[in-house]
Image 1 (cartoon, rainbow, N blue to C red):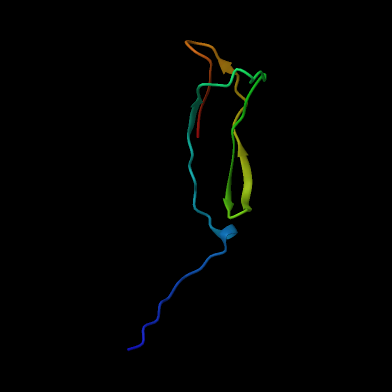
Image 2: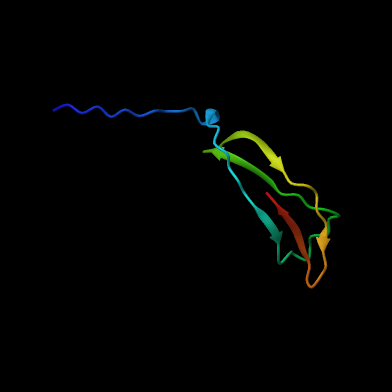
Amino acid sequence: MIYFLLIDTLIATEVIDTILVRVGALHRLPTTWKHDDYIVAAQIFHGTRPVGNPVLSEPMTVSTNFYPRILFNSW
């Protein structure tokens, strides 16, 4: 018997699936971090090659309610 294995292949940059990432907050900030605001940057890599463009969060400041933290709470 002869079996054929059919495999559909895609180039990594042609994948159009949606990736969803949620960043709630950053806790236990190093005391050396003294910036006015902070952002989160996310990008998908295939090996060492970036796929698509980086996505940036809105700039956020350090919240000092209860303890220092950065509340992003964004998708």
